[in-house]
Length: 259
Image (tube, rainbow, N blue to C red; front, side):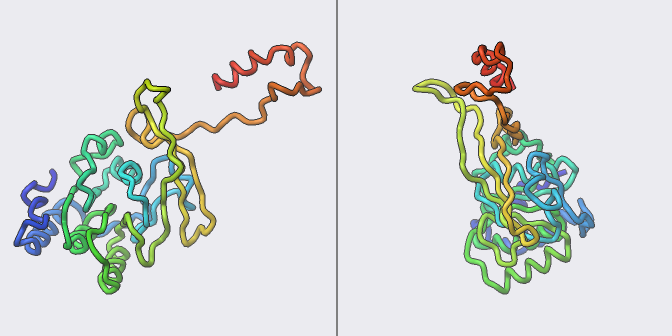
C-alpha cells in the first residue's frame, strides 16, 4: 500500500497547507513501518560492495553522492529488494520506469518530486519512518537545521543520500569517467554506459573505485568483467612460448577477445 497521490501533491510549493500535509504524511507512513531501524548496515548491489569498507551503507548517517539518477537508483536498489521502504525527494526527472528496471519495489517507493523550500521538513518527517532517503536540496541549508536532521538520522537509523555537500557527512560516492557504447561512425544506438564509481569515507580515507555499467544493457547496474592480463604480446615473441604457438598470433588474439 503506497502513499496517496493527494498527500504527495500537497507537498509541492503550490499547496498552502504543506505543514499539515507533512504531519499527515508522517502519521500515514508510521502505520506501515516500525519507527526505528535496527540495521547497522543497508545493503548495496553486489557490483558496488567493494567501494565501502563494510560493503554497505552505514545506518544513521548521510552520504554526499553525485547527482546522477542512475547512481541514486543503484544505491537504493538492494535495500528496496530486501523489502525496505525508500524515498526520493526533489528529483522530478527521476522516472518510475527506470526505478523498476533497477529492481526497486515501486509499492515501497515514496516520491516527493517538488517539495520546494520545505525539502528539509519533508526529509525530516520521512526520516522517522523510512530507512533510506535520497534528496536533492531545494534551497539553502541552515547549520541548525542540518544538525537537527543529523541527530534524527542517528536516532532513527535512517540513511540519507544527498546530492550536495553535507556537513558531517559519512563520506562521498561519486560517478565519473563515463564511456557510452553502441554508437559507430554515424550509426548505432546507445546501449550502455561504463563509468567509475568512487567512494571515500571517514573510516576509509583512501578512495576505492569500481568500474561498472551504469546503466547496463538491461537498464540496471552491471559489473564490468576484469580485463585479461598477462597475455603474450602479439609483436614480441617470448622465448618461453613454443615455436608453434608463437607462429599463430591471430588465434591468440581471437581467444583473448572471447574472454
